[in-house]
Length: 318
Image (cartoon, rainbow, N blue to C red; front, side):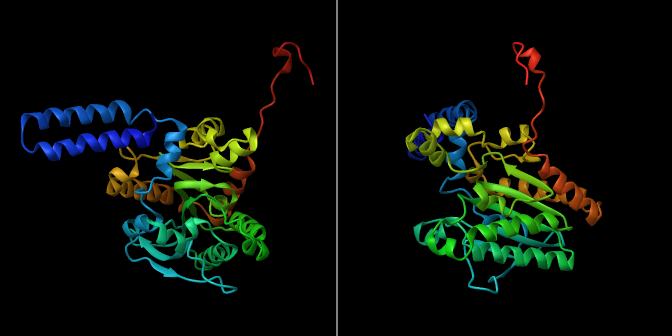
């Protein structure tokens, strides 16, 4: 039984409370619900976390921004082609400190998702993000990015306008910036579309977010020619926050409420803000040169393979 099936069962139990009204049976049922939550909602597979990262009720980037920076002012356009609404960016203060905030934005219904292109940015979205990051560098503002995207948009028009080049430019330019950069994966972190906002001094992930080279469905289709094997692929891909923390791809995991971020959004926002500011106060003590050096060193160390003593593996030598 996956997490969504468990959630449906929980919803039925909660509905029974409303139907019963005030009675001793209600108290008994409440205890049963709490017991069920602790027993079942904590047993999460990698696929369960994929489903939670994509959950329809999961808070979007704008929800986080409204809580973290209520005075946020959105800026638009890449000064080349148009404004891509799958990426939002602008200036706002967090605890009185000015930040440049950039995020991939999902919709909450079909109409809004069409407007946001399901959080799959076009090249102009990445160029808008880069413009805002270069502005932040000029005015010495720290940068916060919130990542929630299945990946960059793969359409013909996007490719014609230089999708790959736009992503590559972001990777290159972000690695050169000397202001503090904090990235938070709040939902899906898919492929280069996510990494284009993820070259940061500190990379954080919500407990039930995912971060991977492609979707489990895509992985299963390529490897086994069967997208229905996505749950199996999710286990192999090591895309959860716990896995990535072990591999030192991310720096910190932000705790979510039992059952996922949508069960208690305020608690999720509060935990996220605390984590962001804790990292910022560590980074602000460093010079621009030190921030730059530590960032590029961090990313250059990804994928480092330890040399093994092959003589201890059956006498095989290389």
